[in-house]
Length: 356
Image 1 (cartoon, rainbow, N blue to C red):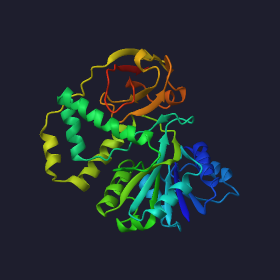
Image 2: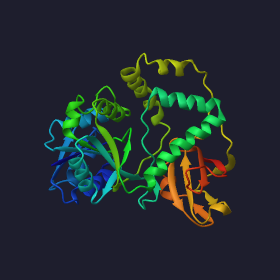
Image 3: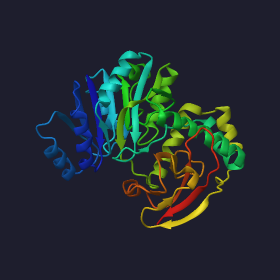
Image 4: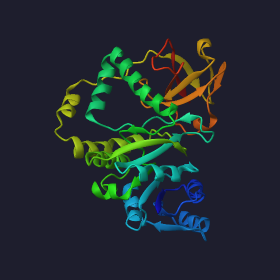
């Protein structure tokens, strides 16, 4: 049996689609929806929405955080496999069957994820999920100090994404997004349980998958399993992330020599050689460089290092930026570039623009 856990927070209209995508699969499963909204109106909306449907609703009196809400449902789950699904995500059949079959065939694997797309047309690919570590922090610090190192580091991470986006075979990864994680229950128990409830929001998934790998389990993305995550990029989330990030590092890397080394390196802003593409109050229209019009890779990121970056493969003279994604991002500065999609960064121009 597969036990699906969805945590709702003022998102009943999205949760309904997430639940529906799970129920439409021909798999033995149970679905738990945990409401963290703690408002009577949302509670009644959920009750009316799922009345008569095979969904167990759990209501918290206060917002107890994502990890604790998942743990509450987990104690009631009967499934051999646990599927964590964000309310703003939905799966595409036969996603569950594909992931279940992969775990059945690979007892050394603790968790898998589907290939993730940002838009409903499934054309904008999400990158590999990055596992926070002192080594990665050191690479970012050095990238801020050395343009040459920044180029090499960005290229290395880009090629990992290319391998994922172009593959039909499972790709081993170091981290998985907790918003679409399919887990082996025995692996969860073996590494000490689902989520550390000290993480209110963010980094609870990285903590889980680091614990799982320390126990010898592997993580994979299975490209033949597909899902859409309508993620909203908000700068307001950055403050919460910084607080839980400190807890994550204190738990796993307290006293680590490289963590201390990173703290000794002076801070610097990430350098950028991007061409200013102006400010936009509606989705921009890009003119594709002539040398890439036969086939190009368009990368989009909030970082001049393009870490992380979303990928789109296309052809033609122009690219109209997705309205769907435009509506999901906050005002602020963004970066993009066109390349031929090869493993080497051929001559290209990166653009910097602002959403106003």
